Length: 189
Image (cartoon, rainbow, N blue to C red; front, side):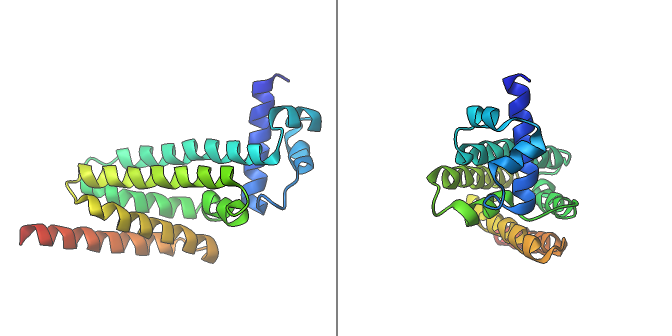
């Protein structure tokens, strides 16, 4: 098995196991068993588990943000795109095996002890916030709105992960809709 195939198999297994069970409860031997990649090869690819966690979060980030951007781009109206973020979150929360935000989960487990993981999580959250800021700007909304929209989305992620419900996305969407309405009202006055 060549390095690229072995790496993808290891990352597929890591993503499945880390997301389902948590990073600390999964050992490299679990990754070996689920991926079919020998332990020796795993350590050649990822000399430390922290490197595997970092690569898993990085790959998941690219996929997650890509799926979100694709969904949002399906809407023509710039204001509707802002609300589409929350619709996408609701669909994500309804996926089988949803366990909350992988980055929040990883930060909760390792953020205090792994600067590498903490930086990966911060980069993901900054990119998501920047995405929301760009959507707000495209909709002609004040830049200051990015922070509250980000907090609504993040709060929905945490709450959905804890409760196992999709309702937080709809609640956050309604709060975002009210916020957009209030901003529109302020600009008319």
